[in-house]
Length: 116
Image (cartoon, rainbow, N blue to C red; front, side):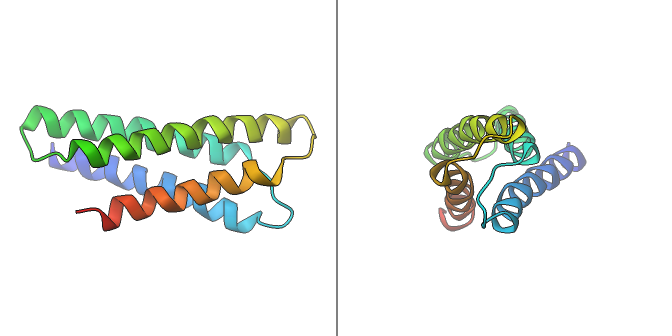
């Protein structure tokens, strides 16, 4: 189980790095690329699986923290979906959508690391 948890954590961190890194890479002009949407989904799925595994093992779980992270993660996924659809259609991605994806991912990373 420990190896599986490590692999899931690795994928979760890669997802966060992709969402945030692509936001920084495409800061000007702001856009949301499909990889950000898929990375956001990767984060939500791996986070839910890790949460379930911790619950099954009877480990200490901070439900409030994980609830906040889940809500932020779902908002990131929805906004990234909207942004990447506009990008695929060749439409201009509104600045607010592009920066919401990156800014919320930064907030989610901060919650993960600073909330004890």
